[in-house]
Each structure stands twice: as structure tokens, then as C-alpha cells.
Length: 114
Length: 117
Image (cartoon, rainbow over all chains, first blue to last red; front, side, top):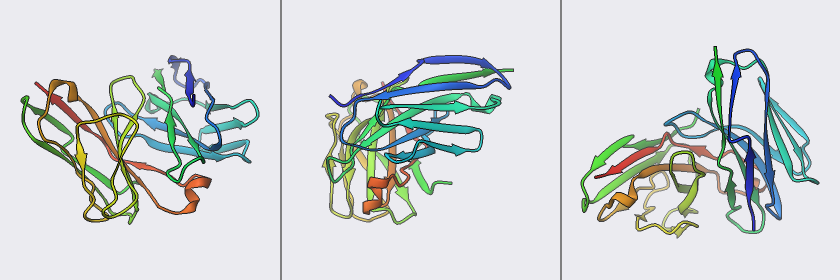
């Protein structure tokens, strides 16, 4: 069964600190993996997209890694800011259909305290 | 910045009422989607479209219906709302080309929060 599991479910850190969010998936055949940021009550916003051949990709203070062999990804946030408080969602796409099915994790709820 | 818009953002209606959630995008995308998301839970695909006059049901069974008469417009309709329909509905779109396999961006609207009382 194709699944996307994220950990931790929630995380609280102090402003300025770094953190790493994890995503494990069983989606096959794998096409790409995306990380989205979703503020409370808003729609998800794309942070990174990684394909099979990419191991790391950065977007400002966000760095995503992908290990396609172990089917694991991480999102590292550097020097956290209060505005980083949000849910971070891992989304994996398969290539077994024309649609390119998307499998969503439940997200990690990050809270940054001053 | 994504050019995909949803209205209304928030709606409280009584049981049995008919409602339509609007979704429009100005990016010329062929593929459009509707997702349902309960608080703290993952997104579930309820409808999608490859283009004009194309509509398909998603993974999660839904009593809602959709239409795609114009490329930019993908409204979702509930003929008779019930409390079980209370949820957040998210519209999304992306370009319909093979670059989907290499990961072109999917853009989401801000969501429509529906409460049925």
C-alpha cells in the first residue's frame, strides 16, 4: 500500500534554532517528492520538488534531502523564524498513471517560540 | 505567487442547502483538482480534471459534483449539504504536460472552509 509517513507529528523549537523534519514513503513507482508549507487556514505552498536523481535541494533556509534507496526524505530548516510556524507536508507522486497520483503525509506541525 | 483563487473562504450554511465553491486559475493550467482536508489530517483527492469537459472522481468518495466548462474555472457543488460535509476544501492546478513526471509545481488555492449546521 502506498503511504507517506511523517515525523514528528508536532515540534516546538525556539526562534533561531535549526530543526529537521522526516518523511518516509512506500510509494512505488516513485516519480517525485515535494515539501509544502501550509499556514493555518491557508492553502499549501510549494517549498521544494525533488526527482529520483536529486539528493538535495535548497530554497533559502529550507534544505530538502532525498534518499530514494531507503525511501526517506528530510526537510531541514535553518535559523528558524516565527513565520516558520506552520504545518509541513510531504507529498510523493507516483508515475504509474497518467495523473501522477499524489500521496500526502499528515504533516508535521512546527511551532517556533520567541 | 500562485494565481488560483477560491471563493468563498468561509461559509456557514444550514442542512439541505445547495452550495457551490468556486475555483479559478489564470495560469492556463489544464489539470485541476479538488481536495478535502479535515483539521490535522492529510489531503484527500475528491475530484480532478484533465481539461475542458473532463471530470473524474478521486480517491475519497464525495457527494459533491464538479464541472469544467472553461479551462480556468472548476466549481464544486453540493446539492444538499449535510453536517458531515463540514471540512476544508482546497482547489489546486498544474500544467498538463509530461513535466508532471519530473515534478512541475502544483499550486493550491487558499481553501474554502465549509461548516454545515
